[in-house]
Length: 248
Ligand code: NAP
Image (tube, rainbow, N blue to C red; front, side, top):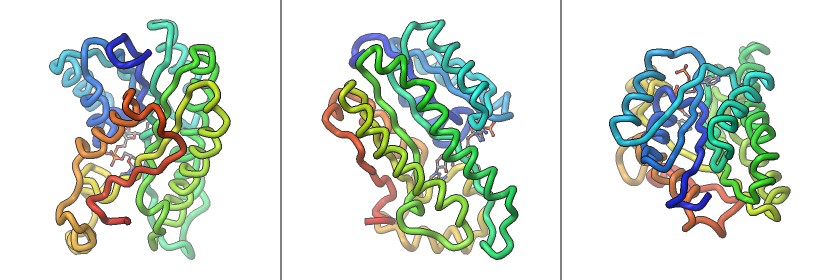
């Protein structure tokens, strides 16, 4: 369960971007990584290969994190294969941006279902095995905008703020079983999610970052690995902003 022994690590949304970076940061012989993705089968195969090249093992499974049944099957698969679940990283997320006045109900529902309900379902599915083990590390990926707000993202901001509340509730509920729950809140990270933004918007975001550059998936992954490590054993219910100072 502790570092140095074999651990089973679940990562949602591991096919691309930050999730792939997280899988790679955990890639080593002792770690059995199970990640899921929505539809990008080739990208998922590439994550599996990159983890293998780095000396680890990763199994990518197509799962909709908003489906309780699919999430339960995903967790059962990892549990059947390894007998334990040590770390859960809730990273899967989408955006459906638009001004509130024009936001479709389906855009609200999709973002809340995947970004917030998905995290709830995954936490629920790992809780029993983690309680039984009396060990667990849950790390939920929010966003600086979940704390600061952002125009044009009411659905996303609500989901990301919800992630913080969910994490605090879980942290208090599960602490007595030696299960910690924390949040990593990225700022502007260069991934497919932000690639389509207009150059002007990207420049404006970099202008708000004291460290003067966008973040990388590796910047986020290092914080996640820290929160899953023995060094973070006494940290729970916290929000770690990894944003180059974009939010302070
Ligand atoms: P990304 O490159 O768009 O990747 C999103 C990942 O989530 C993909 O692996 C995708 O799978 C998966 N996914 C989407 N819907 C899913 C579903 N229903 N079930 C399972 N997996 C699903 O995004 P990213 O930039 O790496 O973002 C990762 C997380 O960081 C998100 O929670 C995001 O909100 C958060 N974040 C990102 C930034 C940023 O600047 N990029 C900033 C703050 C927070 P497919 O590949 O199959 O589509």
